[in-house]
Image (cartoon, rainbow, N blue to C red; front, side, top):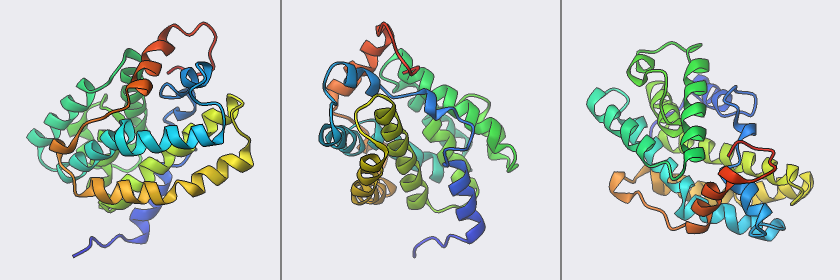
Length: 223
């Protein structure tokens, strides 16, 4: 039977993953700035391909699986601690580690406006998808909606990065978000039924971009 999501839980999910929630997402590009600099992403079509690949085969997919595991295990301290440690260990670069850990820390600090014992189990520093997943699970937002909202927020932030890097304009950027809706929905549906055995990525260019960004001479973003 499908998990029922009430309006209050939906409102919380929308709030936690809105651009206004103070996680500092606007400061990070997850290597996209380097990809633009190197010419891998230069227009709306290459941006679409880059984001779609990350969603299906890269960090987007892995984040979705980790979020799902944390959602299901929010009430099991041993299981939750295991996914906390795994998520941090999977960061592919120094900047990727900084991005996920600092966003997770900021998310948990702000989430204390919705008190729950899960926050004590998570501690102060936890990778972002795990923090979102465990808190969403504790508040019964629905697993698939939580993954979809997380991925949508990630895509929206990436499009904002591309706009600020001059790859596209706002109108085409919004159009790209709309075009990626089916992909986001499909990944959320697949990831909600996945396990840690389904983790894995095949986005070497994106990982290299994340590594190379550490020495980019002039940049707008922290990752």
